[in-house]
Image 1 (cartoon, rainbow, N blue to C red):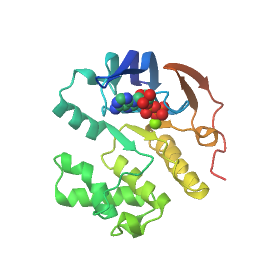
Image 2 (spheres, rainbow, N blue to C red; image 1 turned 135 degrees about the vertical axis):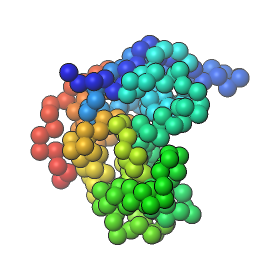
Image 3 (tube, helix red, strand yellow; image 1 turned 180 degrees about the horizontal axis):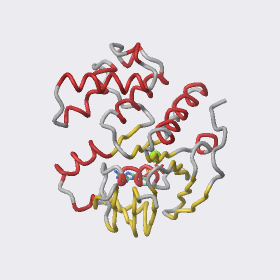
Image 4 (cartoon, protein in one colour; image 1 turned 90 degrees about the vertical axis):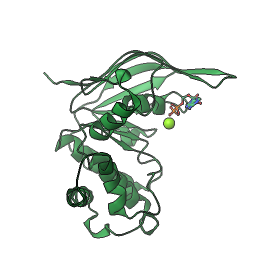
Length: 237
Ligand SMILES: Nc1ncnc2c1ncn2[C@@H]1O[C@H](COP(=O)(O)OP(=O)(O)O)[C@@H](O)[C@H]1O
Ligand SMILES: [Mg+2]
């Protein structure tokens, strides 16, 4: 039996801006087992980012149950949630979200600053993560000196540097050319298959979704689940 990594029950999310209320998620339930690679699809505005942010503990649910890696994260204080997030979840954004004034190495070291890790180990772990994404020769480069695909690989290194069990990615290939897209999808597949990371990836693109083993469609707050055939020979073309 594989352990559940995400258990969501009757999730509701309402944004209340004062003038208007928006409820992108209503009655959403979702189970993701440890080691799954899940693609989350759906039209713009259907609540994909909201759901991902709630799983990652970046945003909070209005009602319902959210258990991730065995922790009921709705019950955590802000400080505990921040620490939990650093250890448990790696987040990859569409726009990379690297700090422009820091080198690749310094960007990747950032999450480790929130943990009791000394400078030497911080440096070694960040170097290892950048090596894992094929950027051992770009440690001292600034984001502006890297291509989009390389910047996204730095962002992946930053997401895995704390060795989280779960990786969430919000349209990680949305800003990349076809070659960089294939590289990023390949790295996510490797993290899933070789290192057993649970990956949840939001994407618009059916081609990107095809690397996942399960695809979920979110439409008007309702989830539709599709099991894909095993991704045999799914190496990037
Ligand atoms: N911080 C926010 N405040 C108010 N409304 C929001 C906020 N974030 C998202 N929304 C609204 O929630 C809905 C879902 O947004 P989102 O999760 O970003 O959709 P998707 O990622 O599928 O495009 C949209 O209608 C959006 O306008
Ligand atoms: Mg979105």
